[in-house]
Length: 158
Image (cartoon, rainbow, N blue to C red; front, side, top):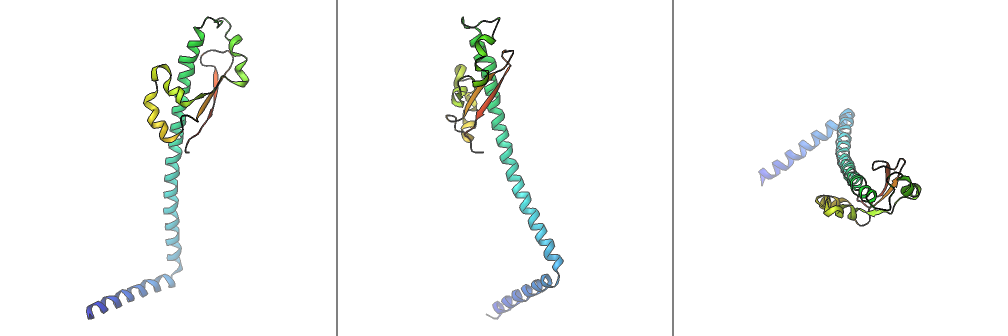
């Protein structure tokens, strides 16, 4: 029992000594607060950078899939159709310059051309609703396969 009391009293005296040091020296308090704030700032910054990196990667992946669809599938299919005037592509696409072509769900882009981009399905469904993320294509003059811009409506968790 005596040993136990001695340890308790020793802990109490150590606590009092540490307490008195910090009460008598406000500079140490300031240093501790600064260290604590820096630590919290580093933790928050690392969490935010990870989130922003993921968002940029997802957006880049969707942009790449949309570009591949328009440039290598949609335009080629349109270009080879008998109704399309290959000498004057503006005749068919000009009216869609402001209102855009019909929007496509991201799911559709993952499945086109024999599921060409289906390997990205699991990655994208972790971050986005592929049924509610839409891509709208706007053809731009001179109306070739690389003259367009997109408007993407994201339904993602970022």
